[in-house]
Length: 183
Image (cartoon, rainbow, N blue to C red; front, side, top):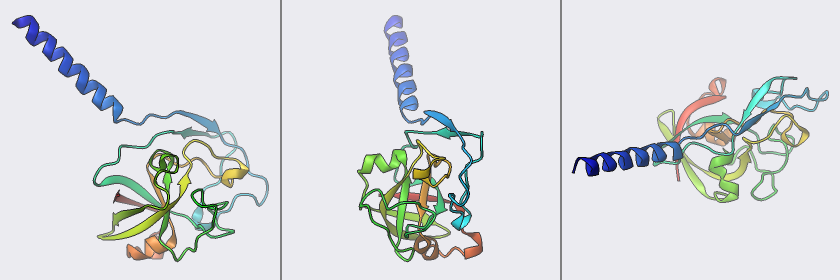
């Protein structure tokens, strides 16, 4: 009987450890920053440009999605010529900054499975629905395809100005905001 309890304890311990490990998102690697050619990094919305030689962590995953997934809201222009770079990944189109749209970090984007689906964003005591139209690439960056910006962290909801306005955040506080989101 003691052996059975001990074996049962080990099985429960192993199962719990596997479950915890399955819910963690660890870096998948990294890239070294390259200095952008003159005029090639769009600084709209105070976007960061890659720094020559700086190490940037990359991810292929994001934290688990829950009923209220914790994230960082950042600001992005989805318009042509904006700091978002090229057209949106979901539909190869540009979107007005007056439309509530978002890009999700690579893991949450799920290879496009969330394209054109609405998520609810909660922050600043308010909520807003926004459509997923793009990926905030956590796997690559510091190149022309990514407007010479670093890879996205793995917990980003990159939102249009319309989302920030709907949350009632004053323009001088746009940039980073702790939020939760749900499907």
